[in-house]
Image 1 (cartoon, rainbow, N blue to C red):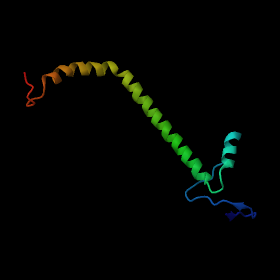
Image 2: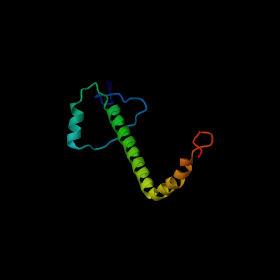
Image 3: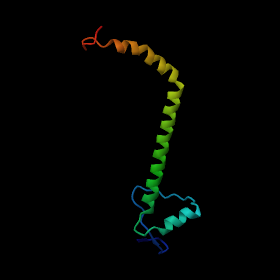
Amino acid sequence: MARSVTGARTARRPRGYQRRNFSLRPETARLLDRLPPEVNRSQLVDAAIQRIVKDRGRAQLRRLIAEEAAANAARDLRLVEEWFAVDAEGWPGDGQEK
């Protein structure tokens, strides 16, 4: 532990981290307070935020793909029907020519 200008003990901030002030619900603050002193709270909060942002990004991508599929379902079905006959004829040289 390092000492601040006032002489109080302060934890060293890991390199590459920036100090931010934010509010937590009392239940969340109690959870953080229950963690053992060896747990790096900055890394814990960083990992949690990174995970949430990543998961929300995935969820948004899934939603956009689903919307695209629904919007183009009729077109896709038409293309499948058009190409089904061509595919059923077989490819040249595959021994399935009629």
